[in-house]
Image (cartoon, rainbow, N blue to C red; front, side, top):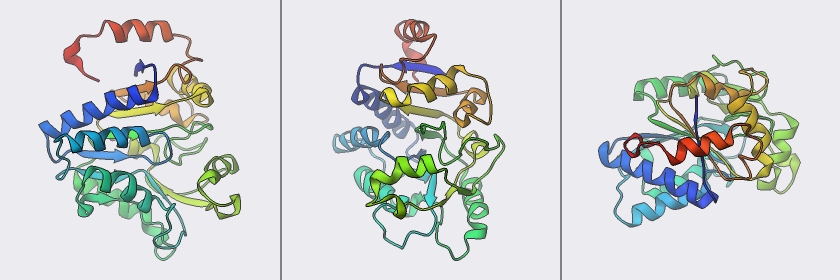
Length: 260
């Protein structure tokens, strides 16, 4: 069962996660983070930047991104390589050589998934994977119907996901049709999953992912198969959970030594 933590604001949730990551970096300077894009994890990256300014050292840490669009020109500001560089690498002071993003260039796209899987395996995997969840329930770009055993591969985005992401582009026509994404099986190999969701628009997907049946129709439900999952929410994102009173009780009475 996932641990569900409900805090008053997304900033409070981000602070909790950032403190945990900073603690990991103190214990293991070479910690490997799985980093997500989109708007949900941005408060975590801002909080980590504050920790770095106050002495937390992430210079030996490594990072692997969840996904990348296919076919965007090199240097496009909305490519996930650019987003990760801007929001994670620069803000945390990471070594660029230790930051990895799937290759979305059209040349060689047929092997992009296999190459990224090999890089993850040879590195030794991810210690903590940050996740958001889409309104369709997708993790990374694993849309409904994705296999729980899936590995990194090229996927076709749903029109709903393209519409959701159109806010980052000048028009819907500019949003790519394809992506390279870690598979659900790849994500489940990470040693700790931290799923973030804020706002009422995510409440339905969160309720299905945390409390609904485990089904490929709801990719987020794959978290129920992992032994160490922390779900961090604000009250709006938690509003559709049937057992939210229990989650709050467990949160308030949890032994401090357990961490998240």
